Length: 325
Image (cartoon, rainbow, N blue to C red):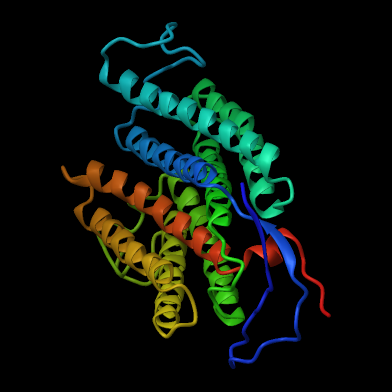
């Protein structure tokens, strides 16, 4: 593990720099830690995707008990049991990786709060999320708890992404202050979209607007509370898309990281394609695969927004506040 020092320079939107800042030591993360953190984040995303498979295949009660499955550590060859068991097995792998990252962060990067804190937060979420998962099974999939389980899972994944992204932070700023602020607004809108999606799922309002888009039952929002929830979800998706467009334009103008600043827009376009297709096909044969892609896409958009918001802030200002000279 190597240590080095570099002065912090934050450029304003007009290209001017603030007063000189004192150099603040920053502990650079090792390749081994970065690899572990990225693997943990990818595994957390995979857990969200497998959860989408469980829901789309209606396998949530494939294992009617917990922590065992049909009274056994490993279920028989029943399809729904194996799908639900795959979700639990993925969760076990994620747990090992999150514990590993937390231990490595505690032992080697206590001076890097931007790395240590999210690693410990992710670790703390594991028992909470496990208990929620058990309650979901014990109460036989009540919608509101399923929704909470999904939101908590996305917050948990965000913690792993924050730890991984912070490990790659550059001491020199990669974005203007304005770009970093816009990335935070996009992150907030993305989280609102996650919550709205959970509400739609918990209320079973997936088809509240029928097979119509952009209208809902022949008008802007006709069909009661479920249709209103669906329309709110759509409006938030449009908001995230608009913010992603602005971020991509600014990134290509050199105001933020070009690749990472563009990826959210690409993911949002794919995600909206999945969502619109899901509405238009209804309960056709393509519904299951599209539902899985929609959940996986939600995790992808959310993870990219989190990573961008983290990377846009220099490591020094996040790990240890600099002082003005």
